[in-house]
Image (cartoon, rainbow, N blue to C red; front, side, top):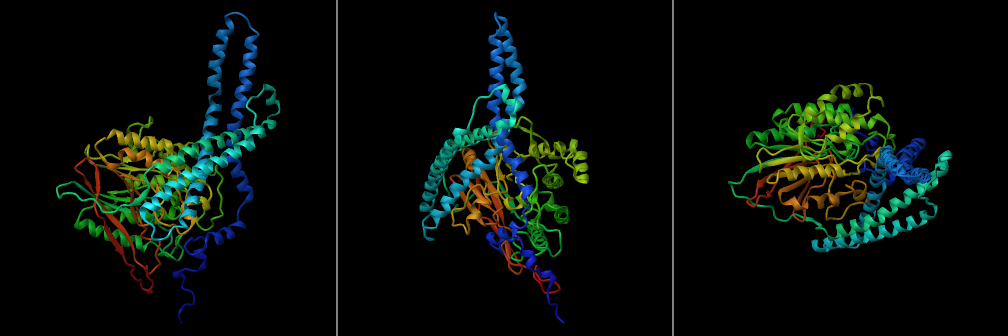
Length: 584
């Protein structure tokens, strides 16, 4: 008698969080009954309210101190007061440095949490709305012009909204304080928050105009067009570009996002690696680059499956490089998108340390980290982690908040990772972390490259003025010049400061290629001279019985010192059948 429900084929429960099988409205509706509102409120306090109060309090505390001290100085006579004033100013500077540091951290925290996403939401929303009125046959020039116009329009719209918010908050602001205020600090909460709203809104108003003009006047993304050509004598590098392989920990497991719309288990990855082994034996590969989402939810069992798969192919493993994707570090619960993690929870840090451990195992002796001055290459990743191995292992074993102290700095300091070129005009790799700090599964996909990491990347590129580079990150730096299926794709997965990222690379873009994943979209394009490659996923966007694909890219040294992108080799991976007749 045939089985009624084939467990290896999955069922409706495997689609619970799948954006390929269910609408975002349906998923959001399911979430409402499961959201932990006390935890949500506490997370809001830690992420937004506390930084807002600290930022708004800074001018009140500073002016209260200055008023009190200056009044005492004026009561004195002679040259002594001047010396005493200088001494007090010096003591005040060092004493208030923690306050100013807290204000600065709060400003940039709120900037990445509210300001930049607010502008990006306005820009992409306007673009998405405008593209609804474009015909499918609209020319590339027309689409580029529309993108430029909507960026400027979004800057103006954000400016007007931010100005309005600042005007509403201004009557409640207060910019000077008194020592007596400290006797009842709760009275300062409202003016402190009003100060913060005014400061952040004013910043957004000015910044959005600058960002809008910069985004509108920059080169707009376009399809690449013809590939480059290079003479047979030119040096070449063959780069396998994989991304979003979403390894699961169960033999017949389905992935969060695709559910039954994607292949089950890890057999498709095994096929990819077997095929690459065959190709490498015939024509050697230089790099195997996996631009994030090696795992489906950053679980230990998933990392174990991934590392076991790589260990079965040592020739590929020794030329492989990985970087973190949002599914590796930002998924709180693969079965429940309503699950929220407190910012103080060690869960996020544990996923980061698992990812860091896997990166050290795959490429630790080959890549280097940037020195503390963020200006030059320092030690290898393995050497940088050596002093922290016991601390990381102890934290992974116990998972306590106390043991997680300091690990955030370790995670931040190892990016960007760099494989320097073998020769001064060779090819190097820069591996970035483009994941935003989120603590909610439903907002896990947002991206942000920190300013510090961007400065470090540019410093390394300048250090090797003749080298060619692959700049690798998980998130797409620009929205593709094609209609999006849904608005959520444009903002829910965006690299918030992607436009700035592209502008920073422009002066050196003739010797760069940017490679990313995240959206599972097969696209090769450019922003001005910067070539951008988006990798399709070999395990997503296809049902269990359909073929998937990936690319092997050939890069060549151009005669003008640039980096040529030759026509890639597309590798199709057809499903094969198991004993039960199911495709995999």
